[in-house]
Image 1 (cartoon, each protein chain N blue to C red):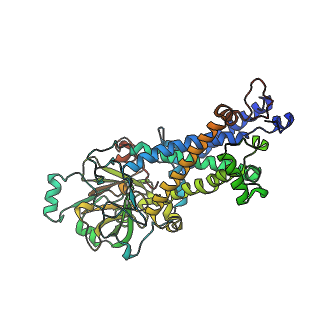
Image 2 (image 1 turned 30 degrees about the vertical axis):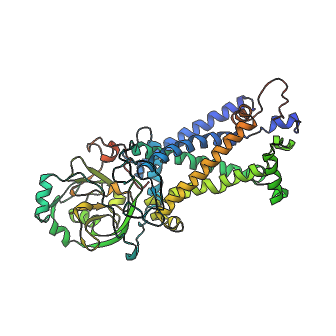
Image 3 (image 1 turned 45 degrees about the vertical axis):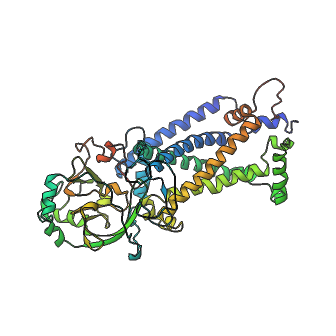
Length: 252
Length: 250
């Protein structure tokens, strides 16, 4: 065994001090570049921050894998959702003709979009995989309008850092950073496999974030809010997911 | 038993270098956390598939016959297992970071110091079936180890460690990363060459199984060889103090 010498002690001390100084500097740089997730605190904050920061750097311009039409799943799995409330059933009975999407927060022109307003925006499609945190997956063709187009319409302000989105389901909301909000594959989805988006899959409007796990693709979207801070939204952890014990960032 | 190293040599070169000892135990911590949380995550969908997609509407490759923690999975059991996916996911990925960073330190150090060449890869004269069968026969007869094994691994040990270090750990990290939709967007070939996302998940499970098999044999061998002295060597680097010990005996 090596004996403990003064030289070793000094060397260890200097290394430790350099390590702490390095960590502090790294944290400042990471914060400046938006590499710290809202749920960075707590026991698992270190791993969460490393994952988010590493993937923000790695996936700056990357596109989720798209598949040929032949790979569309014959029987996509219909995940359980909480039964819709009476208000939702009334919209459903009307074919969602008067479903509204409210967009507010740090935007120049707060706007409420009708379904026909949204359908008049440029429509795109993507054949991407829904990946559930449980382990299962399916491929479907999703038709919708890219979120960045909607954000352009309302004039999202440059200081906005997150887009928060709310479901008609009680207490269900989530958010993405601007990298994902402005990503060309992030859709407000209104169609699936050639038809209207079925209610079971999130119709009339589902957020689609294909570079993250399925739980970020929230169903029944009613409202978007642009914000520069997650403080004031729930417990300030970025979404309902961390309040239920799940990570805010789900790119894994 | 005979001491094969001179006392001077023992002082300058411990049985296990400090980097090996620290990274070994960090890997133990990370691996056990990954194993427990990974097992917990499987419970939410104990079905495995081959190819890109897989869900309960598709035929599984195989199913683990246990109840699931989610009622969306038909398992044949009425009972639901406790659902602990939230913290299990957080801890799984935090432990994965610990494993990857530890592996990076060990890998860079091992290459720089010739650790892999000197202590892990089978030595040149031993890379033959004959050398393997000779040492295996010695194990099966429960013969005593050769004198040089006090300070160096035999060909079977070296092969097992090399497979774990260069095949199984890189493989389990790769297949794990292939399950990340964001990672796959940046490096799509990483999942495509594995045959798709569900294939990667199934391979992740099998490679973990191989690592668990190694762990069981490894701990059993340490127990047979002398649990206390081996643990002492992996913690302090030296041989256990005691009457009659010259430092080189094992």
